[in-house]
Image 1: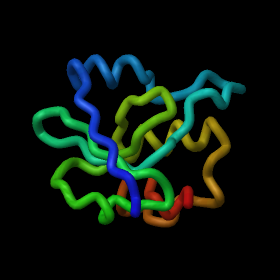
Image 2: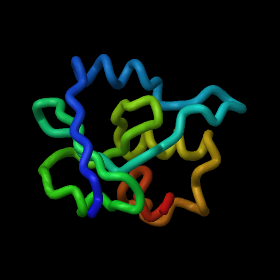
Image 3: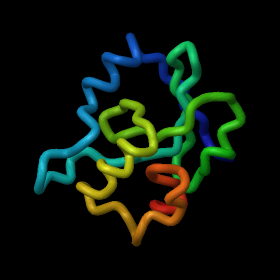
Image 4: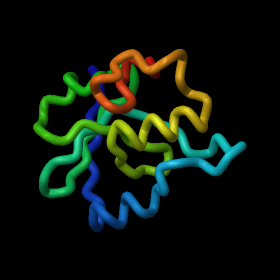
Length: 105
């Protein structure tokens, strides 16, 4: 069974600004950790790899959970994954305008 994690940040903007969405050049400290969805009320629901977004039954904007516990959208996650060396090849689904779980696991 895949464990579901639910987080409720103090505010979505606070969580987004905390993450910064990109590790400094040469640093791999910030990483993409899990597929996640952000609900309209700000709750973040995630499942660990190899879960896909469709494995998360709850409704929400698709994105990713970062290693510092913040949520980011697909485009922001792509930037983090590139800078941390996580991508296993070219982006597979360009129409998504950002990272897909297929790009990582």
